[in-house]
Image 1 (cartoon, rainbow, N blue to C red):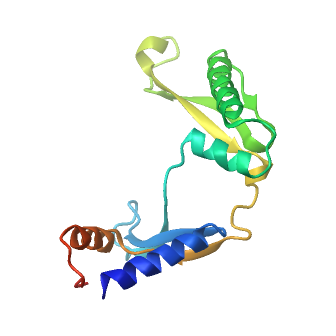
Image 2 (cartoon, rainbow, N blue to C red):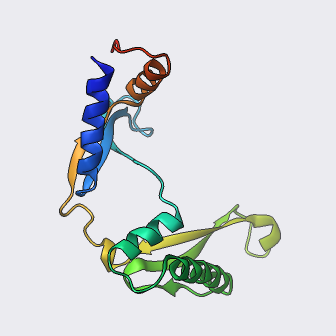
Length: 169
């Protein structure tokens, strides 16, 4: 397949991604508890790009927000710091449509309640997020598109770096 055709197809697909398009790749997975069962095909979501706070702020600003990008970034950082502090104080933090943040503990079991020592048995504090209403039905209004396999993408990048115009798949 010609590299230019693959790249053009990918660019066209990226334009569609802005219209609620989730890319996925297919992976074969087995059941760890039942290794004798045949593997089955599952979709695995593919990320186009990780957006920075500044990029999200610019996106919100471009869609009619009255606050400046700098204001949004400052408020978001203050919100993150306050949320972390409040979680450490034992609160759950509900942020309306954004959702609720709360903590759980990763522990090693003790022989008895009397033998339990927090410094020894509590191994980690995990921050969890329960989506709010804005994330209600993420499946609704979304289209799905299978993306190139990761090994095909690597071959494509390698061929482009080498200046090849044709890629053997």
